[in-house]
View 1 (cartoon, rainbow, N blue to C red):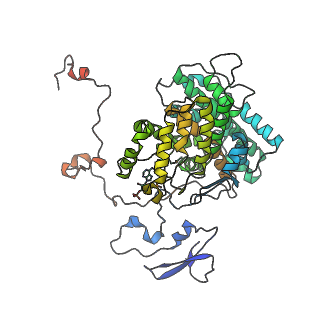
View 2: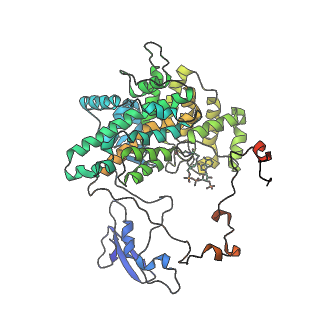
View 3: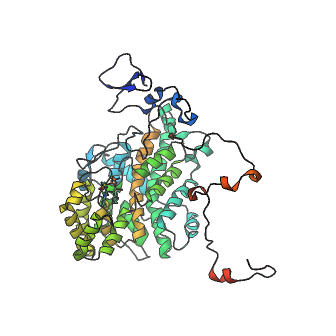
Length: 496
Ligand code: ACO
C-alpha cells in the first residue's frame, strides 16, 4: 500500500502529491505498482468541488480501454510485441506449430507442461469422449432462423450447454465449488477438469451443428478414430457416404490454425471470460460471454474483412490505387497493424506457409495474387513501415478458410473453437490462484448530474426537457409496417 514517505527502497516509486505536499512511497513488485496503493493518496476537497469527485476518498487510476492495467498474474502466454515473440508456457509458437498438435498444445496451455505419452492419451481420450451432445440439443439448434449467424448460434449454444450440468453450477450446488481446491477439496478439481473436457470436446460439435443447420443438413454423431480437427471436418461434411475420411492435408492445416489461435493472453474475449467468471458463474456462461466478445469486428471479424477488401480490390493491377486510398485515409488495410505487435505477427509467417500447403490440394485461391501484391506493396511503402504496420494473423487466414470452402460468416467460428482452450486455461488458472477470486469490479469517474430532487410529471416544463438526441429515445420505424398497412384504413376509426 502507498504510505507517506518514511524510508524509500530502490524498488519503489516516490510520488509527491502537489495538492498537499505529501510524499508517498509505493513499492514496485514485478515491475508494477498496485493501483490500490494510490487510494491512500487523498486531499481535502477544494471549495465548491463536486462531492462526486471523491477527492477526500483517495486518488483513482484512470485507464480507459485497459491500455496499461495488469489485472492478473499469469504463467500461460508471453508476448513481446516489439520483437514479434509469442510463447505458450515458454515454448516459441514457431516450435509448437512445427512439432506439436492442437490438442497437445491445449494440454500445455491448460496444465503448464508438455504431456507424456500416457498423459496425452488420457487427455485426448477424455476430450474426444466428451464430444457427444444430448439428443435434445437438436431441437435447440432447429429453433434458430434459417439465416441466423453461426456465431449467434454458437454463443447461445455454449450457454445452453451449461443447463445440462448442474454440478458445474454454483447456484444449483449451493457452493462456490470452483475455488475449493485451494482449500483442499480435490473433488472440485476433478469437477473443473470434467467441464474443461466437455467444453473442448463439444466446441467442435456445437460449431458443426451451427454449420449444418444452415445447410439444411441433418446432424451427425461425432465419429471415433479421427483427430480433433478430422472429427470437426467429418461432422460438418459427412453426408452418409461409407467410410468417409476428411482430407489429411486439410485436417493438418486446420490443426495448425487451431494451435495458432488457441491463446493470445488477455485479449478482449479472454478478459471477458475472466471478468464474467469472476462472479463465480458456471464456466459455460463464462465461455458464452467470451464467444460474444470475440464476435465483434475489432476482434474476431478481421479475417472476413480481409477477404471483402481483396474482393473489392479485384486484381493486382488495382493495388497501387488501393494503397493510395489507404494513405488518403479513405480505406483501411485490413489484416495489417496490431495493438501489441509492432513488427510482423509471428503467427502470420506460419499461416502463410500453411496456405501454400492447402493451395496444393485445393488449388490457389483467385485472391492470392492480389493478396501478395498488396502485402509486397505495403511492406515497401513508407506510410506503413513508418507506422510499424505489418501483417497480422488475419491477413492470410481468411484465404485458407476460403480455399477450404468455408462461408465467410463461419470464419469467426473457426477462431472461437480453438480459443475455447485459451479461455479455459486462463479461467482455470484464476480459479486456482492462491487467495481465491476477487470479483472484477472496476471503478468509474462519475461526471453526471449532482444530487437533484424528483419533479412530478405534471410540474415538468417542456423547456426543461432535454432535447439532446443522445438523451432522449429515438423515433423508430416499426418493421411490421409496410406501405400497404400504412395506406390501409381501419373500420370504425378515422384515418390519422
Ligand atoms: N491501415 C491503415 N492505417 C492504419 C492501419 C491499417 N490497417 N492500422 C493502423 N493504421 C494507422 C492509423 O491510422 C494511425 O495513423 P496516424 O498515427 O497517422 O493517425 C497509426 O497507423 C496507428 O494506428 P492506431 O489506430 O493507433 O493503432 P491501434 O493499436 O489503436 O490499432 C488495430 C490496432 C485496431 C489492429 C489497427 O491496426 C487496425 O485497425 N488494423 C486493421 C484491422 C485488423 O487487421 N485487425 C486485426 C487485428 S489482429 C486480431 O485482433 C486477431
